[in-house]
Image (cartoon, rainbow, N blue to C red):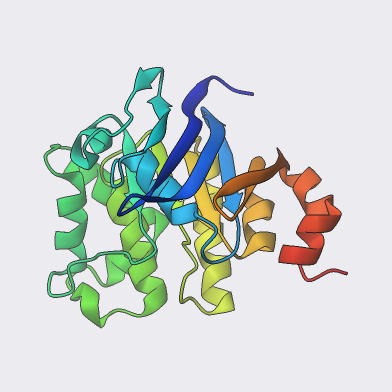
Length: 236
């Protein structure tokens, strides 16, 4: 594996004193794309929130580039180089595309250069930069959410269900853009239910079920695993 960038060790987390994630462990190497697959309610979002500081783990540790960031406030985790894109996107609907993007760069001063980068990656955003985010299609809003995260020049992009609410064609387009980011060397951790798409992008993956990591392997190993094929690929 490449130099380790993220290590999640025996992390448990949940809400109102009730853990829904139990002893999760994973690693992400520099330049890797790592997938976490699982059904609704498997614990994927809780895992990512624990990594990014939105949920304080009840046990275990999270290390980013060798530094313990367990329970670190989200804004501080972001400054360390983590960028999180939740499934809900959380855009500012009455602000323009450009305004949403500029907020993603705050408080850095490299806005012009990064704007050019994301407009090249997502040409549709450049065409609609003065449009209110709330008036965009679901696919365009997902592009904007990812682009806004990229404005901070993250070292690790954490994506929770990036195809949520997208038509199949738009989901494929979203993964084409992620493929370009991979070719440029960005490290990505992505949770997904569209298993064929994410295994086509990822180097390695983890299967999360009922809050526990049940299986891990390369993308090819998971795609060939009988349990994964039956549960997530519809192959009997």
